[in-house]
Length: 369
Image 1 (tube, one colour):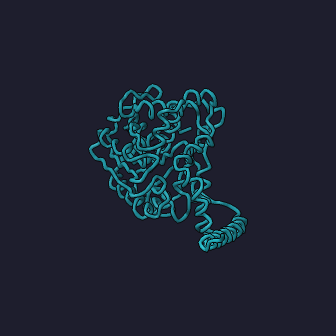
Image 2 (cartoon, one colour; image 1 turned 90 degrees about the horizontal axis):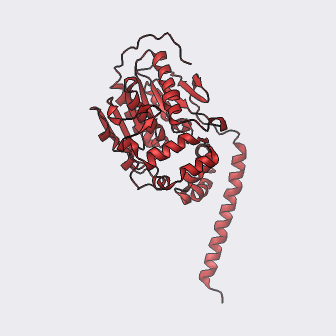
Image 3 (cartoon, rainbow, N blue to C red; image 1 turned 135 degrees about the vertical axis):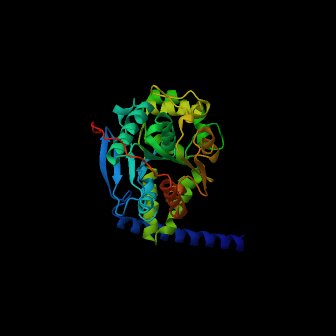
C-alpha cells in the first residue's frame, strides 16, 4: 500500500540527490580551473639557515615603528604559514601593517637523518642561534618572542633558560599545565606508549600524527566540512580559502622521534613545566626565571589546548608585568578568523609597542652561522 507520506519523502530525497549531483559537477568544474593554491604569500627573505631550520625576515613596506624585532616560533607538528594563510586574513600582514619588524622560523621537514634530534637541539641550538642572529643583525641585546601552540611552550622554555635575551614574551594558545583532562589530546597523550612508538618508527610519520588530530573531531573534520564545501563552489574566493586550509591541515612534517619522546614524557605525562625537574640538555627550566613582560593569550573555545592548560602560566612566572588575554573563539580562529584580524593583531602590536624600549647591543665580531 502506497503512503502519501512515503511519496513525499521519496520525492524530497530524489530532489536533494539531484541538487547534490549538480553541486558535485559544478565543484569539479571550478576545481579544475584552480591552477595553484597559494599560501604564505607575504614577501620575505631567507636570512639564516642551520641544517633544515630556516629563519625568514618579512619585508616591511612601511615604516618599522617597534624598535625590538619579533621572532615567531611555531609548532613542529604543522607549518608556520598558518599565520599567513590567506592574503585577506593574515596575522603576519596585519602585524607588519602595525609597524612590527617580523621574523619567522621554519623548522623544515625532518628526514631519517634527523630522527635523533632532541629538544636540546631545537631549543639550545636552532632557536638560540636564530635569536642570536636577530640580536646581532638588529643591534638589539634582546628580542621579542611570539610563540604559537607548541611553539609557545618552546618559547616559554627558552625564555626561562635565556631570560637575558628575551625582551617580551607573547604566547598564543600555548599548553603549559598538562594536568587537565578537558581535552581529548591530553587524555590520549597521557596514555600513549611513546617508547614503543619511537622505538618502532624512529622518525614519526606526519600522517600518523595528523590522523590523530583529525579524530579529535571526527564528524566535523572528516565529513561535514566537505559537505559544506559544496556550498562554496559559486564563490571562488571562499573555495580557495577552504583549499588553503586543507593544504595546511595535510601538510604535516614528520617528527624527530627523540624530540617527541621527551615532549610527551616530560610534558603530557610528567607535567614538569609546572611540577619542576625539567631539563633541556644541561639546562634546568625554571619558570620563575621568566621575569620579562608576558602577554598570554588563550582561546575560550579551544578543543586542542584548553584554557585550563594555558592560563596557569601567569601564576608560574616571576614577571610583574603580565597580562592574560581571552580570545572568544577556537584554536584555529586565533589565526585566520576575521575577529582575530580586527582585534588580536592590533592588540599584540599595541602591547609590544608600549614595551619596546630596547637598548642597543654591543657589536659582535663573530658572525652567525
